[in-house]
Amino acid sequence: MKIPVIRQLFQNSTPEELETTLSVLEGFCEFRGVSETEIDVAGEMITNICGALEVHAKVKDGVLEKDALNAFAQRVMGSIDR
Image (cartoon, rainbow, N blue to C red; front, side, top):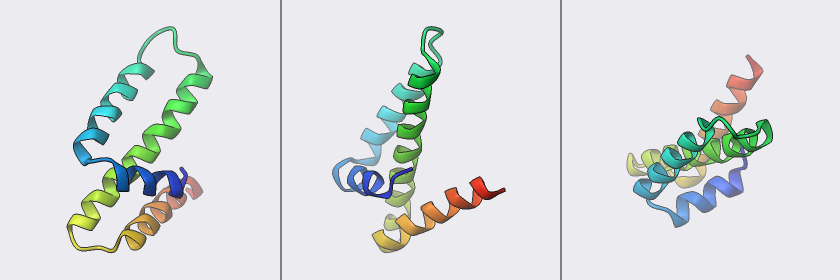
């Protein structure tokens, strides 16, 4: 998870574009010939896209971009600590 990447995706992509990309990456990970390294890279991209989608949703609900980014980062870090 990289906050600058999530911010860039949020600012430059619509939720529809992010959903489409997410679908493609998830499908890619299901191919039999995909290596563990490729899955790790795709997983990182999926996390960043999900973060951008969450920021879009929170901003739509009236949350400031900065606060939405921080909330996502805290949630991810909290789930890692468990």
